[in-house]
Length: 64
Image 1 (cartoon, rainbow, N blue to C red):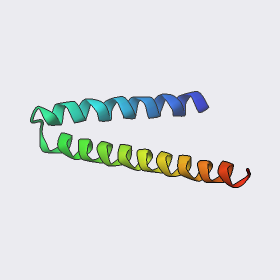
Image 2: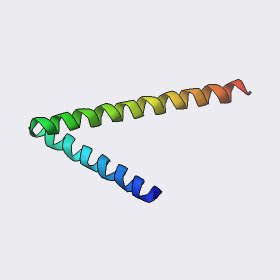
Image 3: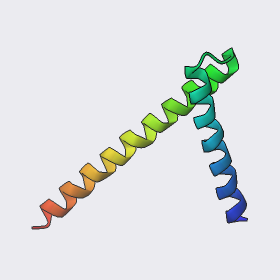
Image 4: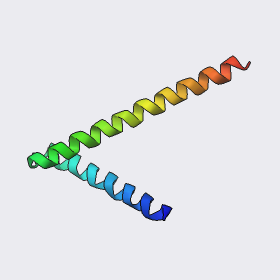
């Protein structure tokens, strides 16, 4: 079951990346919408990872 969920996430990510490339080349409106959602989701993941690393650095430096 977990494998199917991971496969689904992989398919969605690959489809989102394909839409980003297609939108850059002037795809239809729905492709540009999917590309916008994909780029926004990637930005959220990037920011959350950056914040997580910062909080881990503060935790390790507080313990010393």
